[in-house]
Image (cartoon, rainbow, N blue to C red; front, side, top):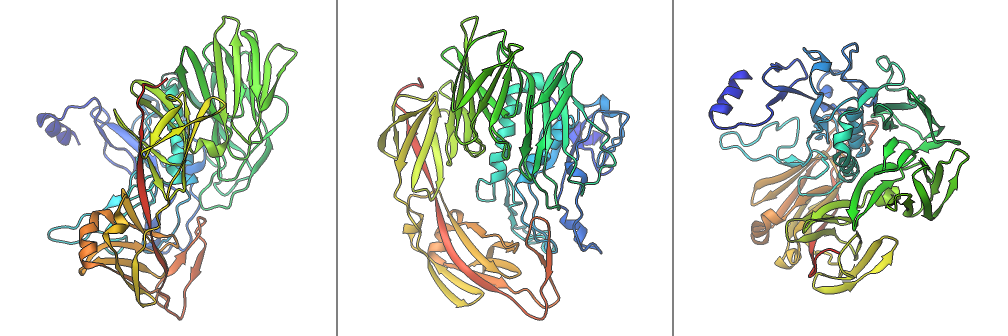
Length: 571
């Protein structure tokens, strides 16, 4: 490792930080490189032995990775934990399907993993893999890992798929990323506090509420996790958490209780500074803030399972509170308790005694998954849309998958009209948002599919199917062992069946496909050779005394991109 670093520097590769793998007994000379860690909850490699059932892993039990006195699962550094940052480069952003372990990755596992590592002290967040890809063919040996994993596909069930597909894990992670980026300076000073000794906690034990705190002095965040891999979890209902500080105790919530849906996680603030007003706590998760015309708007969302959002605001700086879709109550101690609906977005407007104004916009859980923040022409913008938002210095583009309409809410937005796909669209007001909606002529690509038999098909297509599209995703639903796709006898893609739709991006093969067509073959599940798993909990069912291979359907989905034309500067 030291020699590699020396060679890199000699070659002119000079960086602020040099890193090396820390886990698994790896050699990481800490005076030269920063050791990096991570964690996976899905271990396909264990099925190449005597293992018959995947165990529940300890990855979703809160730890303290900066405590010299504690030994933690999967974390056995050769240095004092308090002496170096706990940094992660390999949190399980996904996991590839292995031949002997066919599973659908639960996307809830990805942001839960990020929350666990950050709660444990990680300020350096990295994933493996964040964007899936395709393995190239070799010049001497065509394929690597050709028995254990697919020859070509390295989709990895990642947040961004092999062909740019945006998964729920990406949308869920995005919420945490906005939060970390917004509070990074203050947050990096916080330390992990565990409510009880978690070292002997059984991952199968899901009755006990799992939570931890990261705090600096009297302020911080409560991390709550209700996800556990390879276990059927349940809703955590009717609980409250009391944070004991040097000067006070803060109960979340103040009077009643909250619940959290199964497989969900959340991060709740206490004594959080809202630029002059102290938020004693909220039962909502902070996303980010944005400045516009001298006023700050804070965006929060209500985690799934929590009925309504609640804010307790320290009252001595507040002159007036206005709430839509909710109510505000001044308590006997002078603080203000605000409760908002979880059915729609709501707005709290605060007028301070200084004359300044603040706003708190609370989104539903569903809206939080449609949330995008970016800078355009020097000003920050918020978009709420199902589309994928792509931004560069001069353009905003929306990437859509078969939508019949583009729906877009923006704040602070632009003028009252913008051009979408060549049509000028005017907005209507929806609270602080400007709402735009454009109908789209939905194009269903038509393929010429000839079934040779139940597990073999020939696909032909005309150039029209690609017209107006950024990508054409071939979607194949089948039962069988492995799916193979060929053009002119050359393997272009493969898929180990896990009962999920097999997708292939065709744009890169457009010319060859138009000239030569494509051949699909599904190899059968053979007697006694394969034990399949088709649930996130890795339930397993044997296939005995028969062969199964059948193509259920073949269709295509056109991915389109629409540019927003904005003539004026943002308002």
